[in-house]
Amino acid sequence: MNLEFLLLLLLAYAIGALPLGYWAARVRGVETLRAAPYNIGFENALRVLGEPTVMIGFVADFLKGALVVGLVAGWEGNAAGLMAGFAGFVGHLWPPAFLFPRLYAVRGRGNVFLLGVVGGLTVFAGMPFWVAALPVIVWAAVLGYWRFVSLATLSGLLMLTLIVVVSPVDALGRWAVLLLLSAATWRFKENLGRIIDRTEPRVGEVHHVAGERNDQVVTAFFIHALTIEDFFISGRLTWLEPIYKLGWISTPQLIALGKLVRPFKIGELRGIYTSDGKEIICYLLSTPVLPQMFKDDPEFCKTRAIQAARLAHELGANTFGLGAFWGTVGKKGLEVQAAVPEIHVTNGGAYTAGSIRAAVPEIIKHFAARGENPKNLTAAVLGANGVVAFGMARMVAPEIGKVILIGRDLERLEKSAATLRKAHPETRFVSSVTPHDCIEADLIFSATSDPLPVIFAADVKPGAWIYDEGRPADADPDVLSVPGVRLIPGGVVQPPGGMYDANGWAKGKLKFGRGNVPACLAETLIIAANQCWDRVSLGETTRIENINYFVREAERLGFTVLESIDAPAVPLETMRSSDGIVH
Image 1: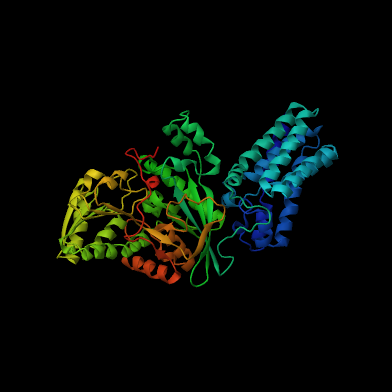
Image 2: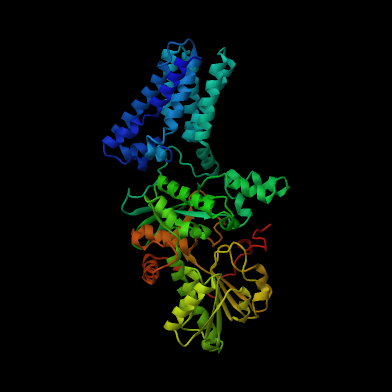
């Protein structure tokens, strides 16, 4: 392999990197992101971009593949052509980011380019026709039976690899075809993961993107594992579960392995129809991050949230919700929004606070019905430094005689208490950094960002009611051993229509009951439906007018808050032991 050949391979890479189809779409004024073949496939590209644009791209990619092989036609045999095809294929899949920064979302699968390479090998490099035809036949057969383009491409390349390996081709040819197969496998690893998770679109299936229909909106929501069992809920990770249970891999090793997995689409919520006839489609995104990681490595978690926001945008969503502890990263979503301005980000805090209004009056009413004067009751609010818990304190303050604000920052708590005293001078407010002070409370409201339990049996007096908004739950299971304790899960909402998961993943895994979602997800759905981008929840503060807006609009659109004194206790599988992990 001489210098001239290496320069030709570099030229092959450069030719492969030319985004001819992208340029053709831009000339025609079409937004290619909405038809990215990385996500939705050739048939949806036809639907969105139109036949002329797609056919121009088809011809251009085929000619690119044939041309890179023709560059090395002066070298004898197929080996040089295969190596040039590999170089061009790498350029096609991974063009230089400094030259084409917008192409991270519009890379194709390279099927047409590979077809051009095969054609070039036949025309320029003397490859027998049957050798070129057999991989194409395998590709067509796999595509026709399973209808997964990526699987078909890999199958065709595998057949080409087997043919070359057993044929009298020199070592360069064998290395070239193995590298070609390896590059394609790496490129399609996420597609293969989605096939395992049953979220990869098949040929003929329509992938919905925001803005295509007036009666349909598309959004995305980011979730994470609440317990160690949740680590294995994705099909692509289930193989780790028996290994972990046999003790062959430790929890720290499992967590370290999870940090290697980028965000991916794990489910698709369908069947949500608002009262004004609008359909809401929600893509569920996830990555195997456990609650304690948000405290141990917040910068890593922020990076993952930014990557997930970009993925949501690539998938066609216009709104992106940060669920559970994702809502705490990057200054509670501010830095995520700044990094990905193309999509509207929310941490769901406003409607989470607003949904509490359905529970607080009912709980107070229950104590009054028992003959107790609410003004003689004491309420404790844990996590009062946060937006949601402070909203709880503000709602309960007019009804209760004494409110204990509990958090980590005593100075901020005192400022919050001073604000509440001015608004409610008849109520006594106390600040504390000690969760054990809950022992005084008849009512305990909790919404912390702590991955570990903060309320235990020793902190609760008999007969106390606990309204737990935390996810993971703030209350340890042992609180139920205290006589008369009532544990109420907070922030559970039922969207309008008959919500279901399109690929069957979410059954029993969202842990809010069949057809129910957390309030932060409901806020994401409402923002997408109303396109009220100025109402997103970001940062440390939440405007009262936004809380009122989501309460009002949720009712208008048909969302129902399910929290009540008759709600079931928090399932034990959503609770954690003292180390933050359910074993």
